[in-house]
Image (cartoon, rainbow, N blue to C red; front, side, top):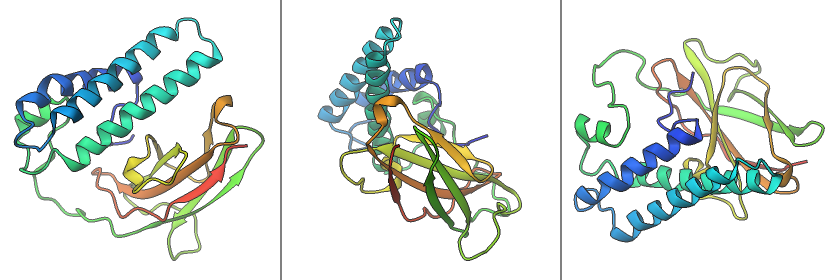
Length: 216
């Protein structure tokens, strides 16, 4: 199970975004969130809601539009989360108001993940990319003892992202190889992929080098 703060279901992602739209105006001074950034978040949330409503028809075009709308929303939320919410540090009540889980402040052992992920990519059939990963510097494919697995992030983009946390899609890969399945509309696009180890306490290690592939 992934301990990433971002919900996996679209309805839950949208609900969190709407919470932020309501709460951020009360904190934009402390967290340096601008009015323009709040307006952009609301516009992205509205667009995602509209795309979700259109999915009733279930057409391929509507499916692709919904995926793009939610990818844009998630990227903006990840940006705000990583760049804006922690200076000054948030209190537990702030986390709750934003729909986030307050951090575990109890000091225990194994709080640092030093291992890095090394991986390679291969194509399998159509709309599938195979991710083989292992601990960097080793010759075995087992995940480190006491770890959930590798956090795998990816996105189809027109230009390279600045950092792995800008990639919108994510999952917990508990074993190798891991297969990423894409939509028909993604074929021929460039996908950017990165991984990091995560232990059972939800603590992540350093990100791998980013790799790319063209969706078959």
